[in-house]
Length: 203
Ligand SMILES: C[S@@+](CC[C@H](N)C(=O)[O-])C[C@H]1O[C@@H](n2cnc3c(N)ncnc32)[C@H](O)[C@@H]1O
Image (cartoon, rainbow, N blue to C red; front, side):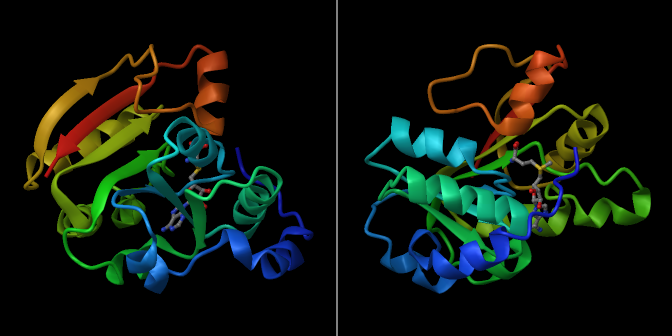
């Protein structure tokens, strides 16, 4: 499911800076707790979580212009003071977050990068896990959902070699848990009857 480039999103992102934040502004977010979704796509998860939990803050990180623009439009049309978008690459963002700051990190249906030479780009590759561990608070959680069995196997293996503690794992995630929401990709996979894998890890 490749997102077709939509030219309107370029000026839209320029004109609607109010729904965006820069990573440098994160310490000034006036919420005691914040969660990141890395690769937040078109933003439905972000919006649903922020609506469901108005006392918590949810920040999407998305580098694709079209996806970021679509999310920005949803945030403009449905203003939420506890949902923001960082329109940037995760590498840049992670590098600029201080230690022990984040409550939860969500990886929802991350790009699978099937070719071995691209595995280091997977968002569950060791260098990312190290960053997640560093920025999470003690007891903070890394919550991963995917439809892709190969990516899930890789992720489990990388987790075993990390400092994270396993909380739960399933190859058939059916009922959406309370602290969760359905993403655009997830809806499409569920409609096709594709099994969802889910992994919860804790620092
Ligand atoms: C397969 S889509 C899933 C989108 C959404 N999470 C969902 O479940 O519907 C993966 C998204 O991650 C974004 N992404 C991948 N690598 C990224 C990175 N390093 N930094 C920021 N976004 C990234 C892509 O642009 C894409 O929008």
